[in-house]
Image 1 (tube, rainbow, N blue to C red):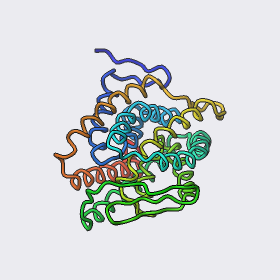
Image 2: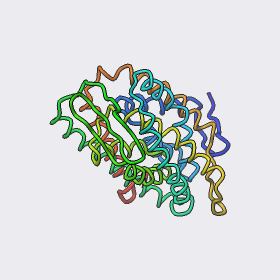
Image 3: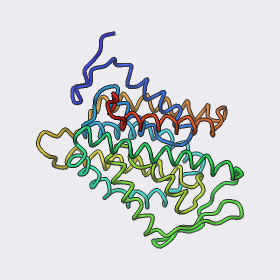
Image 4: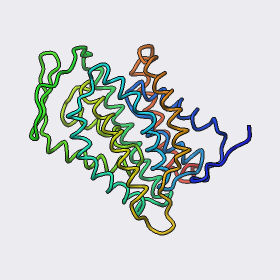
Length: 294
């Protein structure tokens, strides 16, 4: 099979490579509850040399195609709390506009964007390693999470005999920041929102996973609109390559489904440790002077 050229991005590759790469990435990342979008960015840079703002926008197309399967699964299991998803989306929506502006004006050049990518990956690797230590000290909680009450001031959850609450205004502020960073990177923000909810609010992961996934899907759509219609400097490509994003998304949809099915057979600590080491390797690739990715 001859290589094909995706017209918007100019990427020339075999038609099977984008969905296969996304399938493999989503297979492993879905087992730990993280979207594979954060690894697609370095893949696009290293494998295709695609690092313009259009690459971030294309990555968001992946979210729109790959995430609904996970959302449906959480909804069927009654683990999707729409009020929390709404708060994160309302806070993150204006942040997506800021993120798109930052990407097209300050991070449009490949060199500056690669440093930004390295910083994001370093943070995610640190969070994964920190989660490993916390999980080792905590007994697994099998009790279902219940939403007790919610208003414009606070939300309350319960899991077993323990109650959790947080102030809605502070969650809106964090969501704005996450929306800006996630949109600039091209991941929608879910990979940041989960550790923030765990570290700053102490919420159980069973309460936030479905909500953050849903909010990531919604804010990804808003961010795509921003990349498509907001004015950008002359010569900057920001519109997504829909065909390339669709190819990634279809592979990610299958990979996430398979990963969810095989999740119970793979030790989570091993998988999180492997992903953390992989991220650290990518950080060195972008920061080490003279490296192929730097």
